[in-house]
Image (cartoon, rainbow, N blue to C red; front, side, top):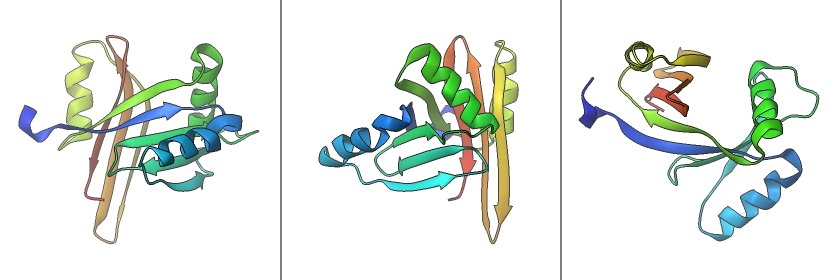
Length: 138
C-alpha cells in the first residue's frame, strides 16, 4: 500500500443522543456544515460534514443493530468522545489484511455499490487505536 494514496478522511465522535443536536449546533457555529440522517439499518443518527472532516454519531433509542450496540457500549464505557478515525485508502480489505499482521480486531464492515458508486468500510482496532478504512468514490 502506498502511503501517498492514503489520507485522513474524517473523525467520528460518538455523542449521547440527548446532546447530539447541541454538539452539532456548536460545530455549526464554528463553521461546519452538516447533513443529518437516521441510518435505521445501523441504528444510528449521523450528522456528517465530509468536506469538514467531522461526523457525529448517536444510537437510535431502542435499536438493537450492531453499530447502535457498539456506539452505546462506547458511550457507557467512555462517554462522549472520538469513536473512530476514518482513513481513506485505495483498498479497505487490503488495509485490513495489513493491520492483521499487527494484531487488529475487526468490529464492523460494510460494502455496497450501484449506479457507478461504491463504498467499502472496515472498522477495527489496532494497538488500541480506533480506525476505519474507507474506500469509496462517493
